[in-house]
Amino acid sequence: MTAQPARPERRTPEPVPALDVPPFKPSLVKAVCRDVTSMHVSRSAAWAAGSVTRTVLTEIIDGARRAAAKEDRVKLTPGDLLSAIDQNVELEVGGRWYDHSPTFRGLTGVLYDAEGVIVPSRRRSGSRKPSAVVGAHRFEAGVRKLLRSRGATAVPAMVRDLDGIASVFLTDLARDAAMLVGEGGVVRFGSVAPVMSGEPASLPFPKDSLPSLSARRGDGRTIGRDDILAATTMQLFGGDLRQRALTEAREATRSASAG
Image 1: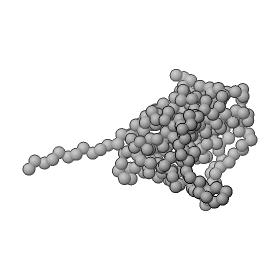
Image 2: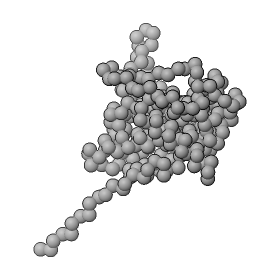
Image 3: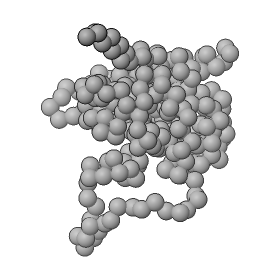
Image 4: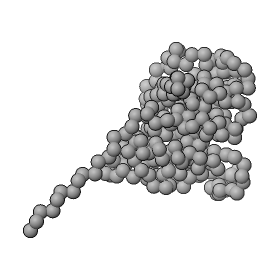
């Protein structure tokens, strides 16, 4: 009886460093911004916003990969997304997508009206009005590229969730940046660091890490790079993810300027 050749072990490709994957394209960022504001978006702001969104999605994918690896899987499912968010509160971004996606049904709470009657979950409308949910499909190519760079694939429902989270997050980022331009900076918002019960308070954010954000410069009609960075501090908790997003956004804008 001849011996059967040993099956080659399935190897998971090593993840590519996040900075080696291009940010979401400036054209996509500007299209999202047009949905929420008529302000001009500078090229450096578009690169920064695309980079921040890439960093957030990369962190979510890596968290889902770790969850899938526990079951010896490479293909990601919505359950892996839930596990990633459950393990890292910093990944709770793009919250408006949660009300739309079946993945999060039952986790966002039951809504009641003034008379105590349960409000049914919203159904998809046929409206063509631009929104983060309607425009989520625009992110699919970038999401699939990120998945490949991290050595993972995903079922269609997981790709759709990643598209939706990216779309809602970037839309919120653009809306906050536009508000900051109108308000003249972050001076009115102060500094708030969320703290979980029973955990020590986080260290204050370094004063020199966000130069020139408390009182913005420039006109009141253009969203600049610093406006995106300031909006990032509003969208992300004061932790490793926020710091990495800011650092990578600065590097992305430097590389774009040099290129």
